[in-house]
Length: 50
Image (cartoon, rainbow, N blue to C red; front, side, top):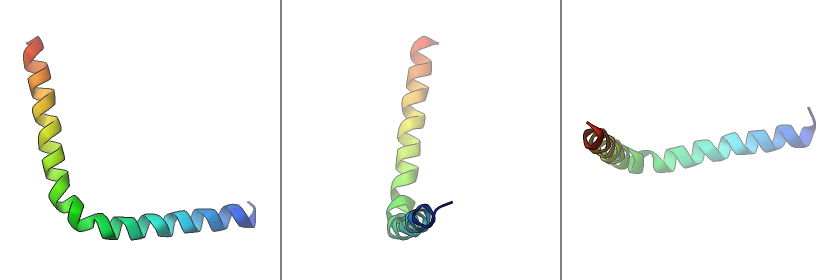
């Protein structure tokens, strides 16, 4: 593996860590809302066929 590829992967991982730390609070609030929304939609979708 070339040095540049290794460096890119390291930067990518660090970038993801920073983003996940920033988005942690946001996700804590937003993820349940999103899950409920999609569950509601899929339930309505299934009920329309049932």
